[in-house]
Length: 349
Ligand code: NAD
Ligand code: DAU
Image 1 (cartoon, rainbow, N blue to C red):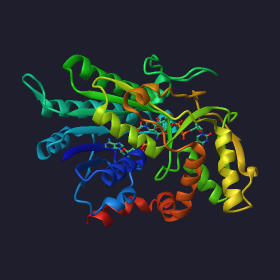
Image 2: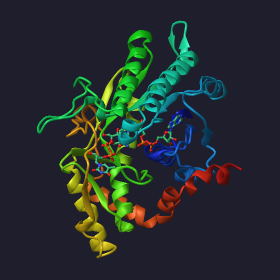
Image 3: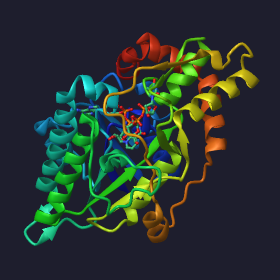
Image 4: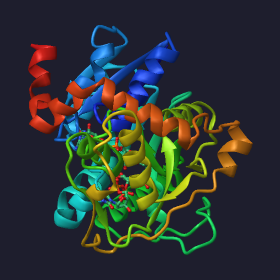
């Protein structure tokens, strides 16, 4: 039995990871620590509510006493840190909370893990701290080239700068204490349980409700999209078999301009759901401040070393995703009405 401390496991990727792991393995126990900020949603986890291998703890990764207590109570083998403030637009308005959670929260987790795992002559056998990072730490690309693990970090937004700060702290724990750590840097994810402040779920929700589709700037910024389950698979592989102290880029070579994404979603909804939804809903709005132009990941290292590859093409993944939101309209209604925030009481009281 391997015990994971998963943080941020009620958010978009974290909940997909928890569901993925508990479906795949019977010998995995997950302690899921999540503060339940606006982005945390226990409804994402209702399929594992009764699973004895899933233990949910509401709390803050910055809380030293709480995290120390979790290491004392459970024999934790792996930490997988998803917990973060994750939205770039919010970071532009409110940078402080990004520094607190993303940088100081990471340092607290590293420190509590170090206290629990460090031995006189090294480290407890088989333990690992894994940091879930982002391609945004590399900055922005021109028309050609890709982010490699060796690309110098050059973050621009308060969000990406806080994630880069966290990555440097993880590296410091490896360089200074030889702590067994790994980092993955992934491109833009999409799929089920994605909070509708982010582009793809926002577009789907707005199309279904005949609302404007806001496109920042000229709509020609490029993101490299990866289906969330492929990201979960990559993290699982890196935590188990990645080389200690290493960074692995994760991405599926699925670059699209934002306007291509908007038109794809509109076309699908128009053809399959509601013919009155058309490109007339598209509205060009003021650009994001410091908007990174292009992200593109070179995932060669994880492919070559661990045999990871993305199973879901964008064409398949986007249809699966839109269909998931159509099949789970209540999930979106609960999120947009705020009802999901009452779910803790419903699940645990
Ligand atoms: P999200 O915003 O959907 O979820 C974040 C989760 O963290 C929420 O459940 C929230 O309640 C929790 N959280 C926030 N602050 C906390 C705190 N102080 N203590 C405990 N829990 C806290 O984010 P996401 O999109 O699922 O991203 C997860 C991680 O993956 C983040 O670290 C993000 O930087 C990284 N990442 C995201 C993407 C993407 O496309 N979404 C791509 C690459 C990397
Ligand atoms: O690259 C990985 C990152 O991807 C993660 O680290 C972040 O946590 C995650 O939020 C995401 O960041 P982005 O800023 O790329 O995602 P977002 O969905 O906010 O925006 C995607 C693109 O779409 C970006 O170029 C801005 C644009 N956009 C976004 C919104 C919300 C619009 O044009 N209109 C919108 O309404």
